[in-house]
Length: 252
Image (tube, rainbow, N blue to C red):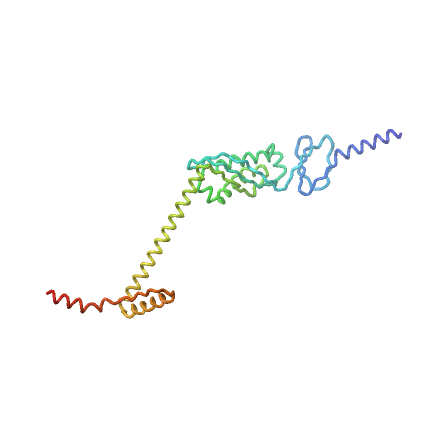
């Protein structure tokens, strides 16, 4: 009798160990009974029928997938290496188990091929300046293709674009030339504005001769304020006109 009771207790413990499962809040268990799918259960305590039931756990948390650098030839024939990060999570555990063998590996491979395809259709300037549009386009393609697997791609970020050394030098020269061009344009615009102001000032002085004398006095004050030993006194040309006329009359 004691041996039979111990054996019964052992069978009960073995049965409970084989049939009881505990799933966390972020986990779901997809139950197969004799090879046919029942449903996804969880979280909490799950009771299985030994030998008959099989369970596959699925994590519902967001997965951060690091896409390794991909060799890409852009639309304008520039070779670059592009890496990205993909954020996705499982929305339908049953589809993630039944529709695809390994949804994580499948999503990773699909992300790599989509990254090469989308970046290969864009020019280098587009990759560098319109990264948000590239991210959105890749995310939409991945989300559409992984929807039958019960996977939701929430975000895609192009992480790094590695350019060849010769391309970096060429872009540095281009940026330097662009800055020099802007500097020359700004300088020319300043000269133009200064010339325009001088022309306006000359026109005003031409209409009001007294303004020239006031400007002359202001200049003398500025020169004397610097403690200079030499002071220039400009003489109006009108003072010499009588002498010039007299000299011309004597010659005639």
